[in-house]
Length: 198
Image 1: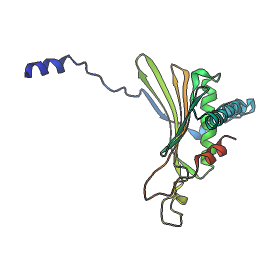
Image 2: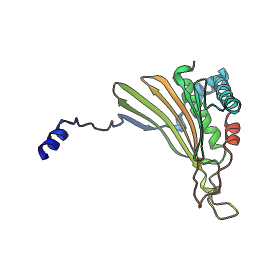
Image 3: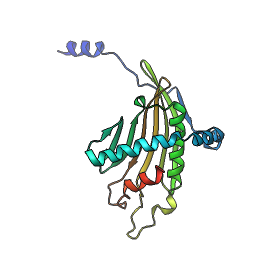
């Protein structure tokens, strides 16, 4: 029996985790603002916002979480949306600038940036690249509440965009709330959505 297990484990192929071959911080001080401002003038971001708003409206009417290649996330812990990019007519630059636009809108709501990165790795046979912004409520207001609880606002916010082999794949916006006795009840995600999708 021991020989059987030795042979079984020897025959298993050893797989190593895919180590990112590119991992760098997004240099926000040197973000290509001229290119971003031109992109804003083209107003492609408005088309993305309309698409997401329509998906939320459709969910209210039909109760379905997936419409027009957008998935709506709605739970006690996490709320947000996921755009399945392959179905849309937006390019890599559109999604990167849209992520930067949303990052700035969330930051203006008394959030602090915890992470801004680009990470690429091989997922055989593809190359996957993820651009991510991760924001948390500002520390200066986190402990201002009537009941000595940490104010989590809408929760921690993740904005991420994934492309596969240089082609847009998915764009995600999520608010993750803590359900813990040390935190205030999170603010209504619908308000956050209305503030960032304008």
